[in-house]
Image (tube, rainbow, N blue to C red; front, top):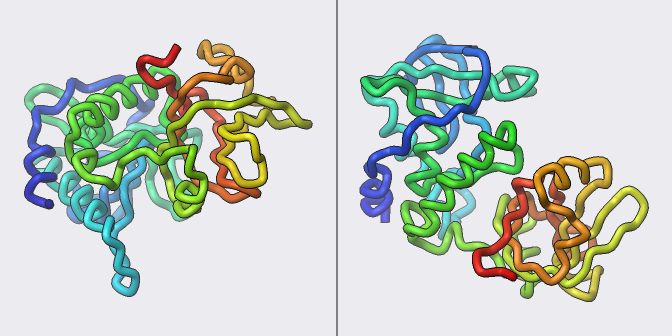
Length: 264
């Protein structure tokens, strides 16, 4: 399996894209922690923004899907050979609560700067996170992910990245606390208080639901995605699975919801 992953990671990378702001760090990576984290030569730890990768296996918790975490780590490590890393700011604060630098990582080479996140997505070792820069950046990253998904590259070649079926809420709920993609047909859209409920079933206490805070609805409208018009549409939703009665995902950005090709 790892051999297959490595071969996919060696595909020619896509061109660099414009994500990130001011440069917040430069250096070489001396140690790769996982599929989105590494340590610079000066000791600072970096977390790549805008993507999610499988976790590494825990010694006391065997997981049949955990090989994906090691494959993602190897894919990131393969990008560092002989390259200087430039980290560009992603959020208002360049560090997280653990003191780690967080941003968009670019490796330098003869063709200029290449975005690490873009390479990992295009090779199938990462998925776009719920927050991935501004809309233009997020849409570019999603196009890289979609290309890898269609080509079944990297982790898309196996079951780890398969989307969950909203018609089987128990299986979705089994992924509680994890980042996932969920696919299904919207049955209804309802509003209650400050929340818009996008329902994928008729039983709110057990079926899968996507919630959108009304204060965020303006960004969905600006992106051409009106929540109340999602009824009867087939969509793909990304986010963290929570349990609130049935399984739920909170969608705070329009990039978390994609129409499935062929849907009318």
